[in-house]
Each structure stands twice: as C-alpha cells, then as structure tokens.
Length: 492
Image (cartoon, rainbow, N blue to C red):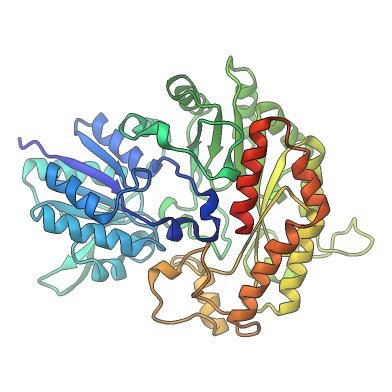
C-alpha cells in the first residue's frame, strides 16, 4: 500500500484580519480543530503534520517554501469566513507546489457555503462539510488504496461531467466524543501560544473543548453550521484527563473552555466542577455562558472550582432586539417580569441579577454587545451603551452586526435593506468596521462607527469600571497585563 504524506494547516492570516482594533493585545491559541484531525489520523495509522501559520508568523511565501520541501500527498486547510481569501490563496500555492496532491478545505465557512466555496476555490479538489475527523480518515484510506474518493460521506466538489457542484451523503456527527484522542498538542509549538491578554490570569493558558453543538438559535451565530444543534460532550472522567494532560505535560496554569455555552448541560457541569475541586492540581479557568442559565448555586461551584471569568453575550439593552435575535428560547423572557414592580422585561432583570451575583462572588465578567441591529435606531444603540455602563462589568466588548453565512441574521439584514452586496470575505470581520457588510438604514455607516467608538470611550472611562479593574490588581505582573488589555480594548 502507498504511504501518503498528510498535512493539515491554518493559513497565513494577518493580525489586522484576526484582531483588528484589538491587535495591540493580540494572541494565539492552538488550532484545536485541525489538531483533533491530526491525532485521529495518527491513531488510525496515518502520519499527519500540523502547520499553524499564524503562530509561526508565516507569510504565503513561507508556506510555499514549506510545501516545496515536503511535497505532501494530502493537504487540508481550515477556512473561516473573514479569512476565506487567505485559505483560497493557500490552496492556490498548494496546487502550484504539490500539483498531484488531494487538497481539501474545511471549517465553518465551507460548511455554511459549500457551493459558493467550491466555485470560488477551484484549486481545492473537495470541500468537507461538517465535522472533519472521520471524513479525513475515509479520504486517506481511499488515497492509500488507490480508490475513488468521490463517494466519501460529507463532501462537496465540482462535477466536471455534470458541470455543477455535487454533494455526497451528509456526514453523521460523532456521537461519543470520548472516542477521539486528545488534540495533537505534540505537533504544534505549545510554548508559543499566548492568548489575547483579556483571556488569562496566569500563563501558560490553553483552550479546551468539552462539548460540541449548541441547541440555541441566536440569529447572529453560525456555531451550529459545523457542530450541529445536538449537544455531545466528553465524559467527566475524560474531561478531567484532558485537563490533567495539559497541566502535567505543558505546565498549564489556566484553561479557557471554548464550549459555545459551557453551562448548557447543568448536571454535567456541576459534576465536572465537583471533580475539579477534588483534584490534586489547582487551575484557573474562564468560560462562555448565558446569563439566563446562571444562578447563585452554579456560580458558587464555578468559583470554588477556579473560575475567574465568564464571557456573557448580553448583546442588547433593548428587549425588541433581544427578541429579534432570539436571545432566549422561551417567550416569557421577553415579557414583563412578574416580580418587578416597574414591569421591566424578565431577561433584562435576569442579566442584571446574574452580573451582580458574579460581582458578589468575585467572578469577572466579559460582556459583549451589538450596536445597530436590524430595526434599531440611534436611540436604541445609545440605550445599549447605557445598559452596559449600568452593568459595569470588568470588560465589555462592543460590535456592529456581522451577518455571517449560515446565520439567520443574514436573512434579517437582507430584509432590513442594509446588507451590502459584492463584499470581500475579509470585510466579514467582527473587529474591523472600516467597510461593514451591514449598514443599518436608520443609522448609517458613519453614525454606526461613531457609536462604536463612543461605546468603548465612555465605558472604559466610567469610574466604577476603572475601580472594579483596579481592585483586581494584586501582583506586579497584573499591572503590565491590565495596561496591555486597556490598550487592546481602547486602541490607545
């Protein structure tokens, strides 16, 4: 049988595309998606290299040199929407240097737009739709055995005879994540990964993914496009084993749980938190959560287990916008709170209550907000800024709407009349709004940009925000970190 050389890579992407206004605090995290694929390939008997052009600071010329030296038979390239052009350029270079190689694109962008991606990147032979681990194995087996790979599940490709995009049977997601080996940590330079300054307390700090999928239908999110709506998770034992592996082999002092909603399965998370508290190692961690899933009991367990920060998507201070973007799955969230004499909506009260609970327990909160959603006016955007200032979390991130392919916000933006046509994929950035893909017709481009700048400026000058952050400085090294974070968030 033919031995094949395999590479999975993250393409060269500039800091401007990755971080935009936050590039002064830019950082890098291991590309877990392709690392999972690489180790799964190794477990099945294939040798698979991993190349992270981001952390290696490779330009396209460096990638070309790397490919020229190695001459791979099978090359997989991960592709996000705002960096799709970089992925396409990498595929072009791969085709030039390794003309006989099987070149595939995968990730959220090709999965959300398979037909368009096939047509825009003819240098790629195939598009992987959905999760990639088993599809990679099937393709590698076909290559090794000299068989036709066009019947493998989970693909899209250009049918030359039919002169159209063709699809194979959709790939069924892996039901039990415990069957997967850990990501291929040994194949990337772990010592080079330092995340964005807002994402850690102590270094080394590494990301980890315990659960795949998200049952919620927030219209601005495309998470379900690749990983689906059904929640699949590691067992608690396997999760602890993964964390211990990072602690013992890479000296991890901190973890960032990348799960879309870390707390979505309460029983699983409560058991995990109890187990973390019983380990012979101590580790700090941050996670993503929905405020309407939090309560004092859960927050207390999070704190005891080492949680120092929770990222919460507040998104808006306007109930009409929260309803528009489907920020809650139950209708009562948008109605008047029966326990509020002023009749404020339940969801807004819940937001404030759980933020105050976090502050009471000493858990930092990074809140995110979207200004200028479809249907909003300048007054609505101002209201969201005011709500953010009232909550006064340690960190707040403000964004303009980015209607990603695969999200229902794209449809809402079209219906609203603000979606711009013929945009470059690099404009689909949530950190650079010099040429926004969506312009709210009731606000206008310049005013939206002004509101965004105002939000950051006013928020980080608010005395309660400044005081809350100063209180967190307990060590000399915290001073450097907070100065860097302030510069990253404010652009100073």
